[in-house]
Structure formats: structure tokens, C-alpha cells
Image 1: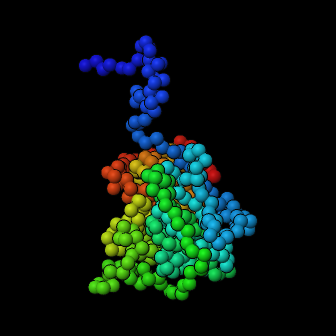
Image 2: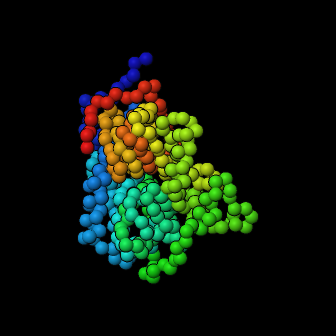
Image 3: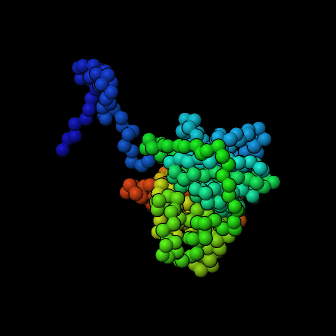
Length: 363
């Protein structure tokens, strides 16, 4: 069968295109790049911890936090996104700096957020009034539309990674924001937050009336709002010891349902022992990697990015990715997988052999 092709050399075709444009219409046959065999990916990109930390500290010295103002946040702005303050088409990544004695006031918004602590001590985040202390390696959740504020009554600053689904929510035209009141929230720091007291026991959930305690995300997000580094560290160590494998990963999950921590985003921690290189994997959907500990390199579509603790890099949708550790390394991973799974768009492919290294970004 011969397939007819569209030709633009017929009489009056220019007039047709002019009339289509005037009617706010576009012919599909003039847009060959609209449907591609694989995603129109961003390029991989890396942000170095030394630069991030230095600029965060300078911001802390020069830019104050006024009551009712915004956070002191430096967003990862991917150079392929035309100046937008987004790390990928669907994910926001940033570093936030809170100095000694400072308060970032209460607000809430529809984009869901998480905090992965990199450095410092003494900070408390209040999520709908539940006080959660923050320490390096901890993951703290502020689900969609929950009130949250950050207090630093201590004597040293804290820096953490912020991850949000803000670009995704913006693309769905569902951004809502509300500032809090001018009054400071009173709180009594405790060793464990209420969410931890109720939901941090492995395999043990509150029964009876306690199970009806209102959770901040109406059951859509995890009831547990703080995931502590010592527990994550121990879980990874047990996996490696039990399996005998040189790499292991854990997914942060709602202890009640086993689902992801929030409906649109997933968080994982990956451990790779020194000298090991992981298998090469492609995944639909983008992700941000944050190196918490160790040094090594990640190969993304044939390009090797060398990293050390604190570095952050983007793995674009359907990019081939594998990691190699120079010394024992832990990498925090934040991605949009739950959104793709809910829409039936998730896809993963494990290569039969590791990809070749074509170029080396020494950093």
C-alpha cells in the first residue's frame, strides 16, 4: 500500500496556513517533533556542593528572612529549561539555608515538599503543629496543603535539600498558596514527633481510636513525617549483609499503606560499596540524585560525572544510568515515579551490559 504524504506545493496552501493561524489552529503535519520515539530529554546536569554551600552561606549573610517573606532558597535551575527555576520538567530541587536564631514563617501550598538534611543541627520544622527535629541524613515531609514553618533556636546554621513537585503541579494549573498568620507558633520540642510516636514502629500500627488521629494529608501521603538516618543506615547495612551484594537501596514508604511517601513523588536511598559499579538502567520520568556520603561517579547516557558528598545531579527521563563508588557511598534519590505509575506511563529497562563511557566530566 502506498501512503500519501502531505505536500505544501499545492495552490493556495499559504493562504490555508494563514487562515489556520488566524483561527488559532496548527496542522499536525507541520510538527514532526511532537511525537518522538523516546522522550525529548533534558541533558544530564550536575551542581557541585562547594558552589552550593558557598552561595548558600553568602545568601545567609546578605539576605534576611522577614516575617511573612519567602524562604532563603537557591533553586537548581537546569540550563535547558530557559531560565525557569526547575531542575527538571516535573521536579524542583533546591538548597535551603536557615541561620542560627532564624525563623522561616508558616505557609502552605499545593505542591508537596520534602527536606533531606545535609548539614547542621538544632532546627525544628512544624508540620500542622507537629514539631519535627532535623538532623543530617533525616528526611522530613511537608505534604500538599500542610502548614509548615522552620525554627532554628540553635547556634549554627542548617542546610538541606528541598524537593518539590512544583513544576508538575504548575503544569496542571493547580498551584495554590496561603501565608500563615503573623503570630509565632508555640511548640514544645520532644524527642519524637507525634507522627513518630504513632507510626515509627516497624510492623506496629496504632489500633482502635488512636488510628483515627487526623493525618496531615488526609491519607494520601505518609502518616510518618520524619524518617531518621540511623534507621535508614541500619536498613541498608542489613540488606547488604543479608544479600551479600555490594549495593542496596530502600524506598521511603507510608508505614500504613506501603505506598510512596506522597502521591506524586518517590524518595529512595541507595548504597554502593567501594569498587562496585551498578547495572545500567533506563527509567521513564526524571530524577534528582543527592550524594549524602562518599565519592564516585555516575554514567548518564555515556557521560561520566564524578561526584563527592553534597553534589546534586539530574538524571533525565529514559537516560541510561549507573553508579560506581570510589569509596562506600550513599545517594538520596528523588523522582516523579508515582505520578507516572498512576497515569500508566511508567517504564523501566535494565541493560544486558553496562553502558560504555564516551566522555568524562571530571568536575
